[in-house]
Image 1 (tube, rainbow, N blue to C red):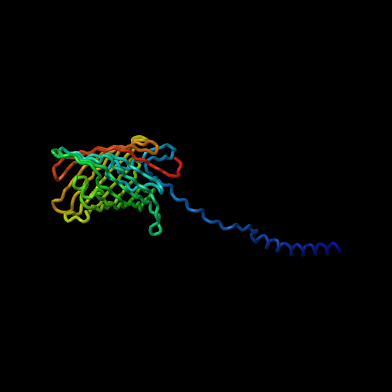
Image 2 (spheres, rainbow, N blue to C red):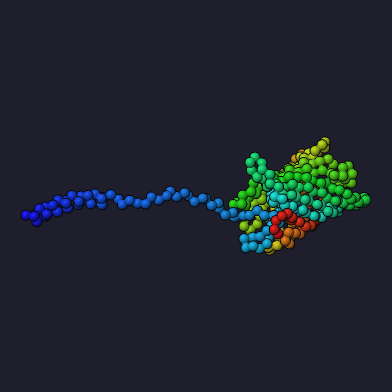
Length: 312
């Protein structure tokens, strides 16, 4: 009797426990709560082109020269400017030679300084420029003349620079004037008055070469007969070795008024880099001239790069 009661009690207990066990098995096991993960910061794409001036180190740590067409040695200029606090000083000798007249800048000092002002909330790489020549002129049948030539001051704003596409753009307002006044004008070393120059500079890097284009206007100030003149230049440059680069340009100028003077010419330039010193040379010739006079162009000099407070 006792055994029957124990068996009945065990059966009741099993029937009560089994449904609870099945209910517990139906519930999913508790899982550890995972903390919310924040998305990884977006890494900017690696630039395909790096903007440089003068001598720089490539990805392999080898010093190479900047092969961008530039002034000097060419007349075409590039949008690049020196870094903040850096100096770029050019010492150049230039000659414009014809059968009748030979005009030369015996020593042209072109000093450029880099700053980084903030304009409209954006930092704009900027170059301050001062250019001053000591010139001479020789004309057949007339005495030679020497003195200060036409000087220039200017500010270059490199307002767009995309290292992903290799495109860079700058605007470069300048003012040309005769520091010697009427004396330089009388000698034929400078034009009278002042001339306002406003070019737009563009460069595009490709893997095999660099392309540069300039377009601008020149306007004499306080001159009754001074009309507006348009200028243009296109050039390409390529490194021949790590320290030697070659470049060529096609340039010209033309007045907007009917019958104005027109000139088209080309120049070939070379740059050789030696640490923070660059040696350059150019030669060229006129292709078409409204006065029918053939011009030959020669030049050479050196570029000194100064980086105050920076390791060489």
